Image (tube, rainbow, N blue to C red; front, side, top):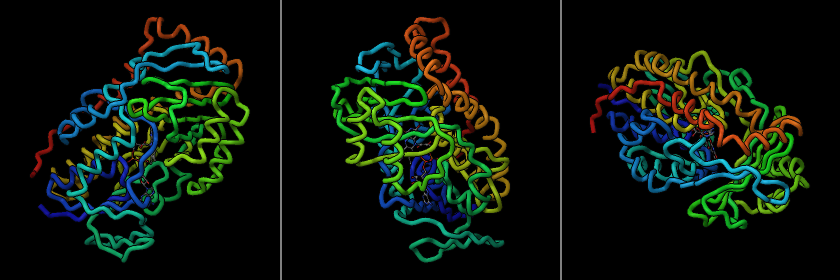
Length: 396
Ligand SMILES: Cc1cc2nc3c(=O)[nH]c(=O)nc-3n(C[C@H](O)[C@H](O)[C@H](O)COP(=O)(O)OP(=O)(O)OC[C@H]3O[C@@H](n4cnc5c(N)ncnc54)[C@H](O)[C@@H]3O)c2cc1C
């Protein structure tokens, strides 16, 4: 088998998982990440069903993840005075394993730092493919040659733009923006969260890391704002304009936002593409088939996609043409099933009118007691389990 040199763009979830499996199959992965160091931050991600757990178990990191699980008990919707008006048990929505995104990426980095070359603080600027490989140029580093280039660089993938075309062709904005940052647990929340919903807006605070800190989360409905993704000051200004005077803890959280170590802001969107591979370039995770951050499926789908892509490259003895075709075939229906879940959630998260917001607040009061209350969790599990994972033979 040819020992392929594979460049991966993006060191969040899909990138490190892919690097891990490529290395175990005898390939040579390099990861380039635009951020200067591993990116912490974000709230929780969920893994559910046998496919997710099997990949984590085969990577030998399931026990580490279980030790870091959030252990959330329930979440309360509160009124403007902060009084709980509806209580949602965590298991109505949660998967089998909920973990802070930052803890997940820390564990993935530890599992891969000796298996892959990591290059932080750089980004691909051009890809020129010929019969034997791809010449890659970078913003900072010298040009290098690779056999394959894989974009694991998320919803706004740089690799996708360079190899497939502009983002507008592939990303569907779901009409919602999201901001998340770490802050003080000033409400003394104990493995729980408070969420305050008004027309078109939701603000929430969840305790994290054994209540030693909290995650502030904001969602608001808006058409595409065409914001510069690196302009944090502008993003924070938009958030402040939207939530100032909104009630509950909004104003305090907006003040604390200025000091957050890990402010994250993004549109909620889905990626829809007819094909995820072109020549020697392929996409994995959110870059290829982002189901939206509201689906609760992004990390699990990225995990499975990376496992399958690496496995198919090994099964095809490094022949990327065969492997890429098999990867698309294995993942197509699975990704579509996971994406279906992301569609409707956006409208429920930030209902467009006061009447609908009030109705949902009342409905959530009784929902835990209704038959079929855990339907969302059952549907998510069904989608997450919608693939029969192959047991690709590994070399080490
Ligand atoms: C900081 C952060 C916080 C998040 N918080 C949440 C959350 O709270 N809840 C949730 O459900 N999902 C969250 N997500 C998204 C979630 O991680 C993904 O949906 C899912 O895990 C799939 O991961 P991915 O690796 O495909 O993409 P992503 O997690 O989006 O990772 C993409 C990676 O590529 C890097 N990158 C981007 N552009 C370039 C470039 N030009 N060159 C090199 N690298 C580049 C990014 O810095 C990032 O590390 C967050 C993502 C990030 C980056």
